[in-house]
Length: 233
Image (cartoon, helix red, strand yellow):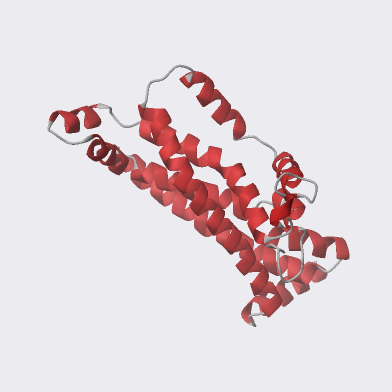
């Protein structure tokens, strides 16, 4: 108990003192998580919207595939992307392996189904009469889409926040594609795993506190949005 308490106190002191190494690790984590979530949202929100409102052959198959991809293991994604980005891979000449960009690519693949599927679910809950009424009143197709998007905005935002929470705590892709390089690709989760293996718990505990704080803020925001979304429905 004394060891745990001392590690916790030392970790708080490290956070308070703005330790450069620790905060650069936090920066890298937030950097790759932000851009992977941003790009996945730009791609996934329209995709989920189209799947929800369009009728096409094989729609149920597409939905089943999207739901299946929600459980895709991160190590599988890491292995596949590694095969493409390695020196002998199709994209090896780009030199992306063991860079933050490689982590972002892997994380985009991880959370794109999340954003698309949860957006689809949010839009599907909206009464289709909103879109039909807008078209009847002379709105263009794009304007009708905006009407539906406005009604589903809290559900879509909840999908984006959930996706960010998924990648900020991810370790398999970050380890396999980033290489856990100090001062370059080391994220909070990979650093925590490394420090644990070394038997150095102070930095790991400090990063754990930061990660839990970020996760708490994300989950609180998600609960707030879901509560407001549910209340408005």
